[in-house]
Length: 186
Image 1 (cartoon, one colour):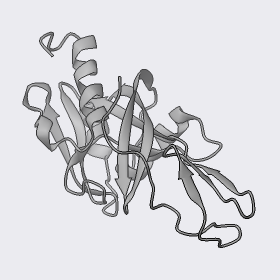
Image 2 (cartoon, rainbow, N blue to C red):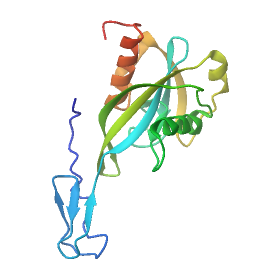
Image 3 (tube, one colour):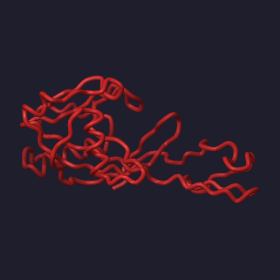
Image 4 (cartoon, rainbow, N blue to C red):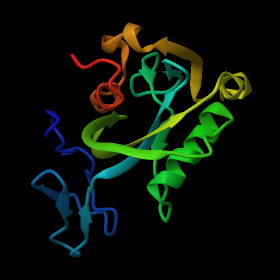
């Protein structure tokens, strides 16, 4: 599967970060080379990890407080830190955004995605896990206002698909519904 978009970050460098030469050039949208000093930079795929949380027939969705896609709905998650396992990153992001993390998560799927931030397009590999939360768990959620404008519990049959921030999250939610046999028509 391929997510459409322009991933060539042609304007990422105007000067070589090593020697300041203006002759740095991009090759194929993900590699930059400086002919003056030999510097090479690879704009590799970034990895994110998110959790589809089933809260008794509703999904836990967050209204984003940050760009990109501020005000749109997303799942708890974010970029995986260097040296961090994806599942640990997903749990860390839950703790940061919800003040809570599930005791157990299970792998759901991966999807390619695009993330445009401050004029630079990033190709991402988004990993999705799923977990369950009880009503008691949901009562424990404490969102971080710097990350989350609001927390919304959306019933499985009322998802506002056009308000979901990222295509990969829509795919993960649909897959979860199909695999849990909640809605076989998706």
